[in-house]
Length: 245
Image (cartoon, rainbow, N blue to C red; front, side, top):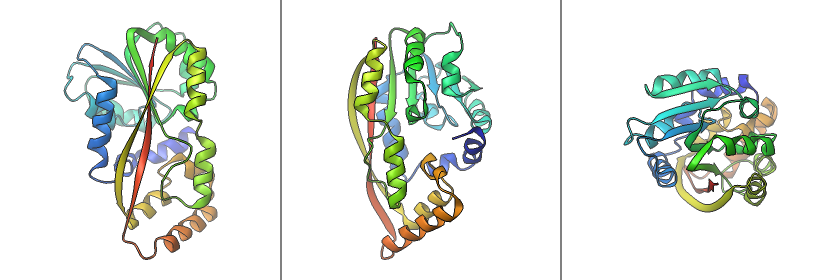
């Protein structure tokens, strides 16, 4: 997905990614448990978006300096206004890995964007040099098969987009990283009208693979599938990959 498409998503990003009232606090708690951020830590958020989740994660670590990287100008503008300790730059993740930066970090978060990295070998080798001794990287991703209430072709595209967690761990091992994988799940209850709106707005990059006609066909499929339901219930399964030297 290119910068223009990400910029379009910025306006509705925070509303779309909260699903329901239970989703945000549950995910934030999972992130806090995984990251264990201390006030003295230097934090790098790769694919930071607007910073909405990271800002909640560091709410009890007020002095934590957070560097953010995202391909979207609009996302980074929102990120930099989120917190006075946020320092965001506009850059793609593969391009970031090519830069000769000497800065190092105690905590690195890569949330739901690792499948967008084209050159993972070079990327993880770069990350090895930027991680302080005793530090950790937390990668949040999903399995290839999900319970999302998407239309059939969208589920197929999602599965194709996602790399398996086994493949991810192999790539990390090649960069001499150790990994530990934990599965977390969040129960979601979503009004049907909200789901249809989110899909129409292409809230996830999966839907950018479809033109307007194909997307309209997919929306019709969902309307028929859920015609007798006002709310849709499912589980969002997340994989937390903890990465250390």
